[in-house]
Length: 42
Image (tube, rainbow, N blue to C red):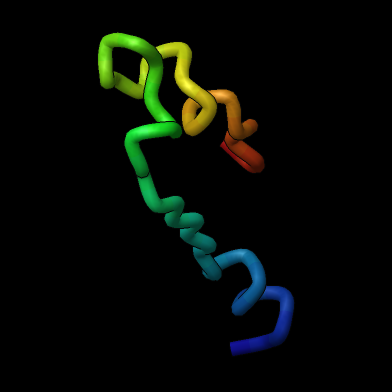
């Protein structure tokens, strides 16, 4: 497998911890600060 093929086949995952101050006033992520993180590459 060449380097370019390995790059094309690679995947990246981003995990973020969710704490009470990360959610909105309804304790959901909709509109909270965690959801404001841009989805890079999607």
